[in-house]
Length: 303
Image (cartoon, rainbow, N blue to C red):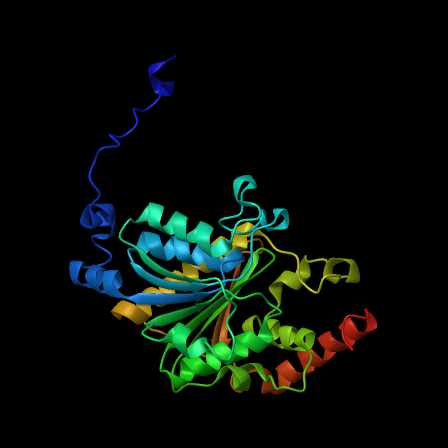
């Protein structure tokens, strides 16, 4: 074996854990005072699936040590392509337990309040109690729960960051207390079906539907009322969401909250952002959503 290909010796496993040493490479980007603020912050993550698990791992590496997470589901084989904790060895295991173990392995100081029960109207206030920021990692079709969680967060004065993967593309937004509300921006109400609300959510999060240039939008791809997904996009979501969380918690950069939206498509190498006044109630958005819903009705996916 040549010198260039020789194995690198494994680091001494007896090296004691040190928070300061673990996050020392943040120096020059995050001050010691800001790092301590991150260390003492509490972030809630609703959902430990495609984006939620990646959110937790990314924020753990940022040095945040207090989390509250919720997800009643277990991993299955179909989660492998995109969910951080999905492996052959974790099939059938609770997502919150797997991800809690991964996070504590990154940073032994981490404290996690892991909820196995689903979020609902009667427990959202408890879930958000004492939380500094909420990250939305819920399934696309969980619009009823999402609406409730966002409403409670606004009532409790908590910022919410939502980021969604769409093909090789991502869209993200921040909702701040006192700003436009979730239902108002996405134009959601109780009379809509879950699938219709999902379309409103996707349309409002990604007004410039870049991914439609290459995504197969056929009935066969939407038979389970989900959309095609890639793990790489989930990881991009975690990066931008963690950046927004950092801005909110330590005051670096400018937080541009809804009705501002942001999109990036890595395949097309295009970035789109803007201020969508009125959200989905904007005339152009109403037309786009009307056309989309008409197409899905023809496909038999929308009543």
